[in-house]
Amino acid sequence: MTPDTRERYGTLSRLLHWTMAVLVIWQALKLFDRVNDGEHWVGQILVPWHISIGTLIGVLIVIRIIWALRNLDNRPPPAPPPTLGMLARAGHIALYAGMVLLPLSGISIMVGNGYGLEGFGLQIVPAGAEIPWLATFGGVLHSPVAWLTVLLAIGHIVMALWHGLVRKDGVLQRML
Image 1 (cartoon, one colour):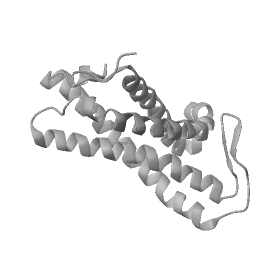
Image 2 (cartoon, rainbow, N blue to C red):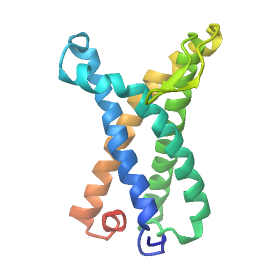
Image 3 (cartoon, one colour):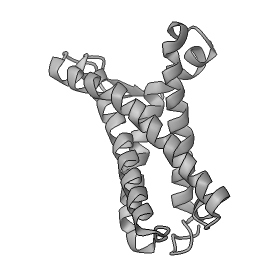
């Protein structure tokens, strides 16, 4: 397994990035359950996995943050100009915040409503008494943060393609 270097992200960084990219896109498809009250293939096939995938994202984002912090000195530098690098850093921080807040707010909704939490058939938090303030907290955050995270992810994809296809500065290749 190759480590992160100043020229390219290593194997684990790329594996975490692309795994989470697929999972976040999967979760974003949940937004289609608002079409026709979820009565279509997306609502019927993908949505039942929403809580399990969200739980997995919650675990992976913790691993990813720890890994990123341990490798700060080995990461490729931002592309010039400096303003672009600052915007990229802000965008990445916002994406990470979304990937932290979404599982936390989802757990808050489930536990706050007394359902507990189950992921991939494993009981993680047992059902219990309702905690209204916790359910409200999660409910207020979850949907707006989801929409914002989807917009940030779209921006991330657009900028990666811009770097790869327009600027041709090697930024996209660092993660491939």
